[in-house]
Image 1: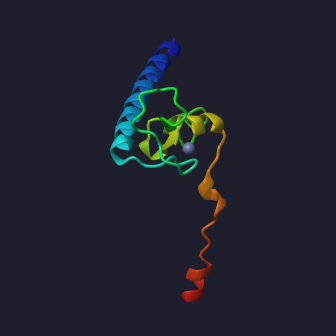
Image 2: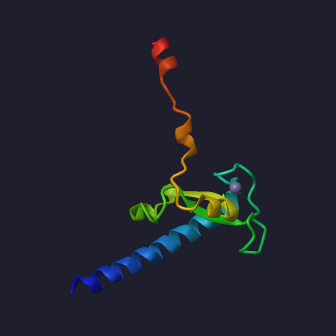
Length: 109
Ligand SMILES: [Zn+2]
């Protein structure tokens, strides 16, 4: 039955996601970007995985609602473990708060 095939493809996807997240995590450790949720510095030095200040790779579009973006690094953002936890799976997109309108561009042309 097709159930077995879909299960193995899910497994493959999961591994791809883990590899992409690990790769993104390494990039973050190198570039040390701040938390995209609160803008504060992330503690990249901590060895405590349960520290709320430690790095957690957040998915801008939650994996639960956008599984196709799960392994897409364009969808990944550096966040504090604590911030990511409090955000949960909500679709919080700070960028959408400030609409970039083109009134100025229209006025100058
Ligand atoms: Zn944060």
